[in-house]
Length: 167
Image (cartoon, rainbow, N blue to C red):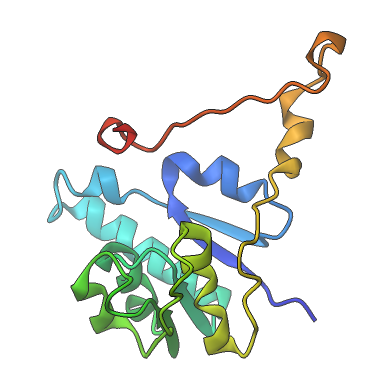
């Protein structure tokens, strides 16, 4: 049986993640906004609300394919018993490893971001499909009808969450 998938995502990306057919529940966090006033009561209420939602979801395993402390800490805060993260040489921040109960083997020689995320699968007893290509076809219905003149057209949008990543 397919496991129930709860995905914690920065609030501005919530509509994208929530629309994916493989995601059962998407929860938004506002870490970017919360960093401006980290000790405010509003932030404390927001964090507590996310932790309550995670606990209510009944998660048994938390996966951190980013290797960032800001993503790894949520599983720990929610008391999720298994918290899987990336190997030391692969994750982006050393401190993220503090919150893991298990570290994935390095995906070497596979270094593409998708393969790095897939390197968590052996911790779950699943062989990674190295070189997998993401399928965004679930987004097509929201795009509306395609003009006949666009048959065979491809659009590349090399964007990111913030301008400094577009270099």
